[in-house]
Length: 170
Length: 338
Image (cartoon, rainbow over all chains, first blue to last red; front, side):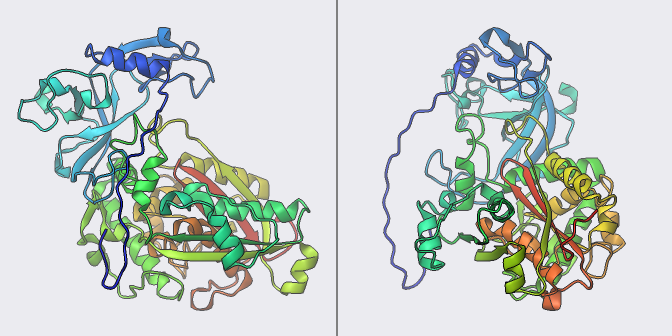
């Protein structure tokens, strides 16, 4: 925060730990993610495939359980994008979110809803809605990449970002 | 709003200290971007139900304290949504790109800049507007800094500090206060949200649902003809394109033509945002109430330099974080519209 001339400020840092129950389906999702599987949940009534998975179909109000979960492709279609280019405090870390970064929604093959995530591309001219995209796992990255991790841990950063596929990779 | 300034019990400062409501019944309403329109609708319900004769409704925001983008992110799912979500502008930019890919990038970009020029030029007629840029041009807008492609700095609303207060009264009390009140004809609310990206929502389906509901209720066949002025909630220039289409002012993808024909200009058939809109002033907790209040000001003929001539019927719109829409339609004549 910028201190203006003559302004009095009090600053402090504090940890604010909390617990968040993610639900049975999300637990299953992250367990399967460690095995490099991306799981959605399919409504037993209307067949809509939700990604991320969740407990109730928004259209039918029918409950979905871990038995309704099925694997999705790691590839999909780019449905929306931007390149975030402004500073703000990230409430998940308490620090400034690094920018610029690519921010997209994509529909993985087999899913009926969209996944919101980072993209490693920051040149807005490179994005084309409708093009193919692919999920990237952290252990597949070069070792000197900032998002590299030697193994999957079962958290959201196992997939640090989604990459744009070049035309020939369709 | 508590969420943005990181404070609690804000109703005590505003209600008792600032407004002098000591020993009066006070209720705090905070629904994100729609806070102002939720307040506006609840004020109407309080009077229409007969519980109270007179109610004062206040919306306010001090965005200099705290951070709105950070506050907005905390409203979303910590596991799936928060890591990549960039407050309101990231998703609004993403939706703008979906709009552009459907209706043409160049055309939409030019139309978006036209929206900024229209609204900021209107703001120059409104002494309460935050940004005063009377000589703004499309070139100036289209060469400003890129904030989140395709949104440039001047495609975005400012962060404002401000407040708005509206007095509501029943039929008997209103006559004692003014000879010329604005009458509520109807209100409408629509929600459509289950999870961040289940739908693309770039064309704000809740605006379509809410507006169809209220038009049907009031017998409005063609909003451009039947409404005299609209104050809509446009946090970005691109939002005015897509959302005016969702409100039925024209077909999807056709708002650029409406702008070209001057329909939504001050001199047009349906001026949109004579006040300068959200693009000129955005104290979030007050913003949607300002839309309702500006609609009332137009109906009451108190707009001064921003007054549209002969307003009989006006619409105000609120929009909020989970992409919901709230509408009110106000009229000069106390009799029902149909």
